[in-house]
Image (cartoon, rainbow, N blue to C red; front, top):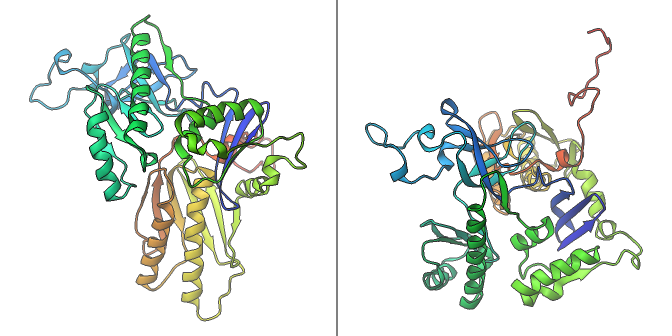
Length: 419
């Protein structure tokens, strides 16, 4: 189920599987400059850096955004072909002062500006429209028979001159539903394209809907038993949206009236206590073991300990069982804390190769439930797993904390003030 808690300064969304909190999202009132993933802008090229194969683009936010060479779209007729053929260099494709159409693919994080692409895409309920492209695809999460059915439908509803990607949510969708979704997206794109031609300066052309509608668009399907919202205005907005795109699920959107309920929504569904635990450095496993999660500038490190788990048979079996339990919990914590970038997991050393392989397989299986893209390498001889998880925005801890002014995030204060 989904719980939405609205406060004057922020909106929080919790996704639960059973009673277990698996994902958490925050949107603040000031997020027009930081939570801009998916927004489409008319930007102006500030400067081009050939040595970095990147350009900095002014999109009207406090920090300039960055556009890398691989994300630039160009017309071959407008670019001088490089000697010997191959891809043109970025300075041949972009010039300072040039106006371009671009979309944010990654929010600004820390000192880094937002990341851009010129391959614009507009997500709908069932499909993603890729304007002026030949892109075509169907979600790999759908089974073969459903993919064949959708392929037949897509050939008839695909708009001319545009690419289209069918989402997992399209499972069971009718041709009429897909047509309606595509028509709405094409209309939206025509409006964006027309606005892009009026004026010259940096300007936001399309804004992704509020986080509640966005998460519901991405997540809501027949598996959800309820979407509980404690704000009347947002409830009405979400109910109207779901009634328009998925009428059969509209009755699952429920209003949680704080005036008549004895407990706030997050306490009523046990989200509050789980959220507090998700901010701790240490996570306890059911059998007595634990995880210690530390983040650094370069990567996040997760250390697995047996703790009070002493087992019953022998050391190898105890360690193996503890690591299996840890693999499941690590995958859950990565989703819940929204940890991105490079991650190193220090499992307890296992002597038997087969056991190491089984723990690695358990970790991959648990991560398969995570819609954010991950890449996992095998457990090394030292018991370490190196993996990456796509970073789209700041994590849970960063979004709910402020760096200490005294130690500046180091966690230590020197005894001697003259040092």
